[in-house]
Picture 1 (cartoon, rainbow, N blue to C red):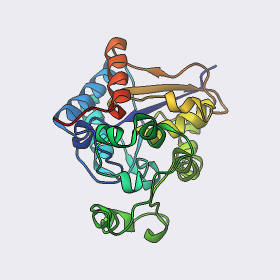
Picture 2 (tube, helix red, strand yellow):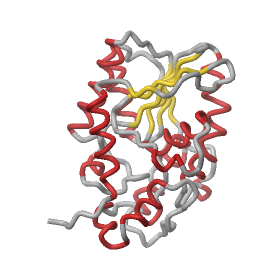
Picture 3 (tube, rainbow, N blue to C red):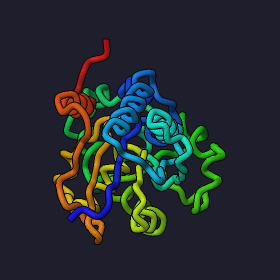
Length: 258
């Protein structure tokens, strides 16, 4: 029997999603389409009668901006928003800034799929020679984390995302859900996928085929032990959702630059 409702949301399309580049820990705002996706998501949730008590986001702007736009469209701007680096997107290391389709041409689609979708393969680490290293690690937001800046990731597999996310889930999110509060986690494709893997018990192999499109809310109905009582529901027009999933899956396919 369902006791709790939890909503997961991958942020609306970002500028680099549009350009098919690995964005990761580079701070990007939403694209125009991403703003619309977040607003449409909020309107859908309002129409379906949902009300949030608390929202969790990463400390990346696209995650926070999505939460704001969703709450505004729902008329729930007053709902508290709590931010943590532990909900950040997966750190793609030296791949940050690169175009996925061009990489597929260079390295092959299977290698790019392994980097993007596998569970325990860590991409090459970022180092100080990388063009976005200083932009990330000199950012003041990373002085607010619960670990020293020098201990923050330099690259992550999905497994390592789950490893840094789970302590926060257990210490901070779970107690709020157990109080009966309806929680929205407005985060990223991989932080949401990592949490889904944990909650639904998805195998290391099968998680590679789990795709979350931008701006589509995912409803999980949980029992008293926080185990799902039914399959996750992606809310909205199902034909549009399937088209959006295909668009994400096609991002890692080789397409010559024009």
